[in-house]
Length: 249
Image (cartoon, rainbow, N blue to C red; front, side, top):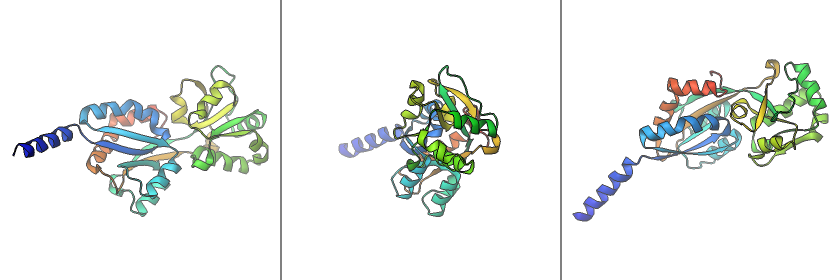
């Protein structure tokens, strides 16, 4: 009887601590999540463990059936996960869309990218540019490769392009001056104090990534994951996403 009571007490203790919600997430949301998640954890007792990377990498891991409670990927990737039964469509929330931006070393002169022609001239004049490794499914990199091809400058850009193998290098290499111009999602550049934002790509050639979160079918804590999504849909959190470089869906 005493053993049974001890087991019940232990169960109640751990239940009161809340669940650990594992989220596979595209790194574009990391700066905003760093700000808004502590309040969710304090309110609910849950803990959110993010595993950040490229949206392409996160989608592949979810497709392979990796055990996690939720995933944050692009709209088309979420469509595919729902079609395969990997993510629960009824739980889906569009967090917003973020565009591609350019950045330079702190205090460096900011090149002109305010028009398509100016952007092309700047790219041709640049000593070096850098972006995340496209082999990892980085949407900005994949888009720029396609864009340079359409602009007819791919052969000029390839020799001076650095593909960062490590996520930390995406900003550190530019901050050191090893790479002249870097590219990333606007939401991540805005939050990075070690570099200066040049600005977004001009609208005619801008490319937006829509970030969506959904509960995975293999979730160990589906109810807690739903609580997280409900919290992310609140007006206060939505406003923080807009401030952090995400436009409305």
